[in-house]
Length: 177
Image (cartoon, rainbow, N blue to C red; front, side, top):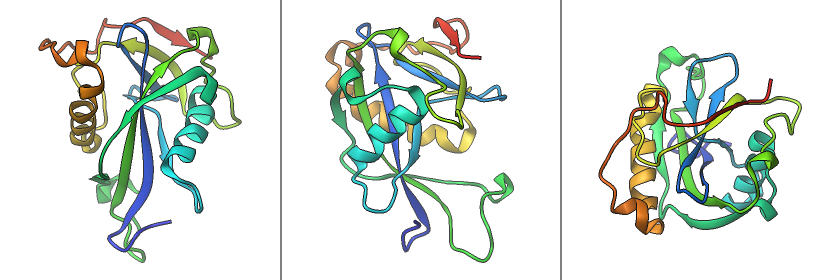
């Protein structure tokens, strides 16, 4: 489902723990880390899509999380032609996303990267909220910055931090494979 401007509706999920650390998933068989995200299916609201994607990618149900906030508007990124997902015969440009900020109310052991038949991630870790985005694919970085900056208002303790930490060595990794 692509809109008139060529963007596919999508949701992004920033999952935090009680220490205000964020969940990062490592793309399967890649050295790239990202937040959970996924497309909005026909007839779904962004919130319904978020809960479906949360279960498919992270194995969590609505009872394991609390919604702290969401972005006010769509945030867009374009997928480069070289990425291979753009076809000349259609007008696909990229994704438009509504981002949700969630608090994990369950336990780390509730996370299951193999909840569905086609896992997106093969490892995960908690990282500080203000993490360098070098490990995120380049064309998504600005949307990540925008989402983190907009949603930090729901985390007063984090909003007052100014330290931006590097990804390497800042979290506890977990592997599901």
